[in-house]
Image (cartoon, rainbow over all chains, first blue to last red; front, side, top):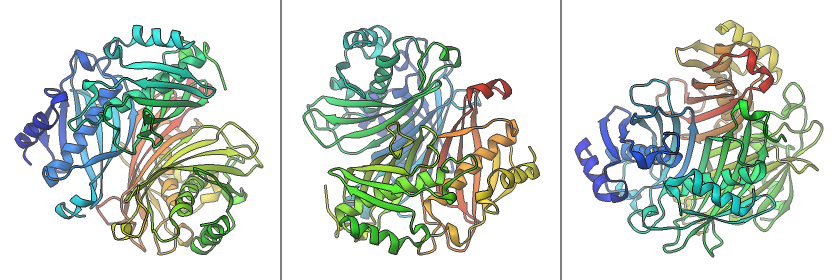
Length: 143
Length: 143
Length: 143
Length: 143
């Protein structure tokens, strides 16, 4: 799937988060996704909420997967591990760089680094595992 | 903090999630929290979204901590590990049972089981770590 | 599998850890396993090493799985999340209480609390995920 | 600490794993560590055991920390999250590339990719958190 395909896919399939995410670019290992931070992602004090950071990590690795295998597989998140490293900077979007580490027949694993836009030090690190339902296995790529 | 104190604390400190959570009861090891599932927690197909489940786990362990040490400490989530086990049942609230496993001077660890109300099989399991800022250490309990 | 079956299974299949583990008892939710702590599990200062605690968690959940489905499935550990909570007490065995949280066709998830024998406060908490190879799926139980 | 200092430190402080690890090189972000795979790291079938992979991940991130702050701090592992991605290749050492993501006053977080020597596809991914005891805080670097 191209960047435009992925953007259209999010808008169509995830109406609840419409407008939250933008596909920045595909990379050799995965994808770069932007969270357009608005009032509803914030906690008192101006920091981005934990659930918003979790959601960004989940979307980023999921789209890295779809970019590789197409929209056929209904992958389900089975495990997430997140380290919250620093407070995001107020007034900046979050940029997530996701890469796929394993694209198996039943399990897909990727990780992601999240930064405040324009900053080097990461705000969060996450690794995500997805399970591809067995009846979809035949339709997807193998590693 | 009592159940009423904790409920008032959520409403006051977390206006973005006002009305989402209810304190069901304090337990010997921790606390039971309800996520009042509404449209905005759902994904297409009627399942509760990953960020909503993450948020419930985070709030539940955080309130288990506040119930023990009071509202003084500004604990920050530093690590979260979540296993998504089953699809939540449509039309049911989620019930989270959290317990504290460690209440240290600088680190607090708890875990939580989340179920669809009235069901035995868990929907998710999570463990959460919180860091208590060093300048607050003197003010909090030790284990 | 009974307690004796499981003990025989460990001795036969894992010669490298022969003598390390004992099956204490099966429980309604899982199993209780003892790590017989000896010199080779220790780090300087007398604390049990991280890899030894990891190995105990892995064996405990794995045996909880075998107790339920029998020795047929070649389950492979795919994810482990461990919180190290306290220093184990010198001169005491470690006791691991494992429970199965999900026994699916392709994924099995369990968690475990590890304590120094006779003590209440946990030394470590871990959650483990196992994948059952697709060609074995037909042979195993479903949830 | 230089590569030679770190090698001497492992030999002196961790006699139980003497000879297991070699410091390959320091990198801009961290360190590269080799596990010299021998019989005692193997499981039946010739695969490297889970505890050995865990131990490699732990040592690698720990040495990345010592390389940066020196041997003063007695850092303690508090959390580990490991994804086991592929079976290691028989007859090859494992190479771990660790990087530090956060070097705080009380918490240090790093992650690591582990590969069979000469292969591109990773065998495992891990993230590790270390706590620096409060009484050592004054003596160590801050981020």
